[in-house]
Image 1: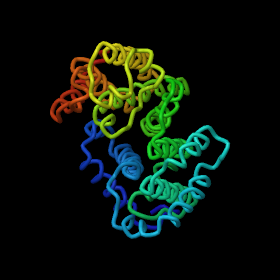
Image 2 (image 1 turned 30 degrees about the horizontal axis):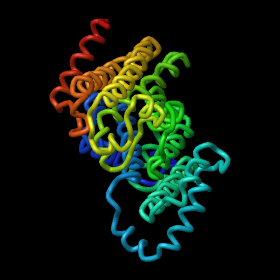
Image 3 (image 1 turned 60 degrees about the horizontal axis):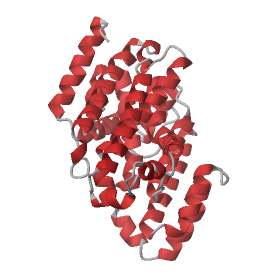
Amino acid sequence: MNAVLNIDLDASYEYCARIARRARSNFYYTFALLPLEKRRAMHAVYAYLRELDDIADGPLSLEWQAAATDEKTISNQATERLKLALELPSSPLWQDLHLYSHKLNLAQQYRLQRLDDAWQQFDAALAGDARGPILPALAETIQQYNIPAEYFRDVMRGVAADIAGREYATWDELRTYCYRVASVVGLICLHVWGFRDERAFAPATSCGLAFQLTNILRDLGEDAAGGRIYLPRNEITAAGYSVEELEAGVVNAGYERLIEQQLTRARELYAEAEELPRHLERDGQRIYAAMFATYRALLDKVSEQRAKLLQQRIRIGRWHKVWIAARALWQTRLGAP
């Protein structure tokens, strides 16, 4: 066992694998394309990112119900601890969240406090005190594959923006959010899969942006119904559409223009991401081919069913995902595009 960890590593990796299996995400089916050691690492990364995501939108615990009895205490702690967690009070993200601070309800503040706790526990794990069921496996993975810890902190900054309900005025603002919650995930994966040189970083960044924009379009109706609008406000207006129409589920000419613009952007990002395999080791080429094919198929389905985006979440069936992964593996072996 690694001396810096304080619980059994095998138990930690197995716990992470169970989380990945239960989630059955678009990515889970591609993990089987990796050798066992790298697969375990991907399970650790996935489980931790899933835990951060649950802080943002998972069900609130019994602990929350007890803590909610003292709103003033939670409010003060959340504000001060969030500022500490984000490290740089002058950073654009902190300024954005500070502007939102007067709008945050008690539940949001509690979630931000939990995120701050996660930030501190993450730093402690890297310093040798890895506690809980996930952090031991994650800490070893970060050490073994030389993954920059700042990537995970960037994800936490993106999660903080989600909790605060940040709005995005322009694509540049949304792009920063997408980079934090998706592109850096791709950069993390590069270190596990193996890459040949830093030329892999640019197409990997584009890939993350493409994947996240696909997710935003897939979840458009569900997010809008919950008052969460990710699409740039200036582009909504320029399309002759409105946030109010989006929240009401209105499909008209303005909606069509808005969605087509996002689809065009996503296709351009996917085109930029097609260069990545030539910079990856063989293990990375296989899993990337499967992930890329799965998400590209999802974008195609979103495009085909764009009129239904505000009524239902577009999905790819489990066996379709398996078929896509198998086909991508076969094409990679053959050297096919």
